Amino acid sequence: MTRRPAIVRAIYAVAFLLASLALGPAPALAAPSVLVQTETPRAGRLARTAIGYGIARPAPDGTISLAVQHAGIVARLAVVPGQAVAAGATLAVIAATPAVRAQYHQAGTALTLARAERAHVAQLRAARLATTDQLARADKAVTDAASALEALRQEGGGAPSQALPAPFAGIVATVAVTQGQAVAAGVPLFALTRRDALLIAIGLPPRAARLVRPGQPVALTPLSGGAGFAGTVTGVGGMLDPVTHLVEVLIAPAVTSPGAIDPPLAGASFRAAIRTGWYRGWIVPRDAVMSGRAGDFVFQVARGHAARVPVRVVGEVGGQTVIAGAIVPAEKLVIQGAYQLAPGMAVRLAPPAPAR
Image (cartoon, rainbow, N blue to C red; front, side, top):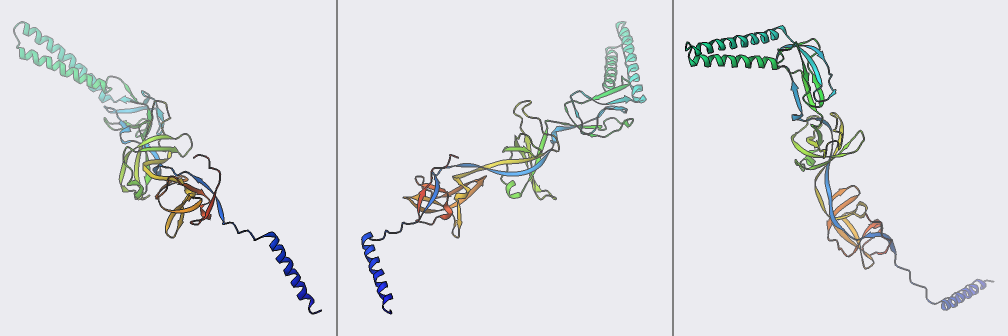
């Protein structure tokens, strides 16, 4: 009874040995490999952009002040601030004051007297009773009186009232008078802004603003929705805004042809992407770049095995990264699955990724 277990074990050992001899030696374990997605390295460039947000406002040369050249009273006010007006539209009707009307009549009387005096001098000159100088002075008096009368007529003195028209199509920025108010000559009554003379002012951090120069192209996107359009940088501020601590950049919207886009409205908000230059190098998906203690790196496939290549990130745009390093153009670049690799590890190639 005590020897039976030993005999059983011996029988099992002999049976295992015979089975091993019949099956042959055990196969060696296959080396581990990783399935990865690759692509051929490609060199190129991506636009370097500075992103900012701001609003549209009138350009310095796009707003004018309107006034009348004689004292008067606002008989009718036809517009309100913010109203869009067409070229030639009446902004207000200004009635001439009695004093202005009297000046006009006085100028008319002076012209009549000057002409009569000139005719009398001409008769005397014909009878050799007046000199040539006297006739010349009479001619000058007529000219001066006619000029004074014409000036008063152009200022509105010849009519009981004068309509003040808009010199161009635009937006009424300010109205500085009320109906019935007396106004003096030359005092600004309205400020009119051209619709096509707006600038978009955005703010950028100082580091980004240092790369911005006048003339650089800009992609403008309305935050209220709608199609975007192009623009051009016209100016870069030289100081920080005390509230936002950003540098102001001015952008002029570009309209390539009349009616191509509706001009932006003053006060509208925009996102601006300014192309400040280019990132040049090897363009790879962002996930292809790994980071470690020694810095950034990518993997390439050399003879079926992973080869680690140290790189430097030049810049990122969207989901793509521009890198610089000792990339071998003839060897595939791992763009998916790199996180599973170690240097020298065997790799299996997945079907090529769709062209980007």
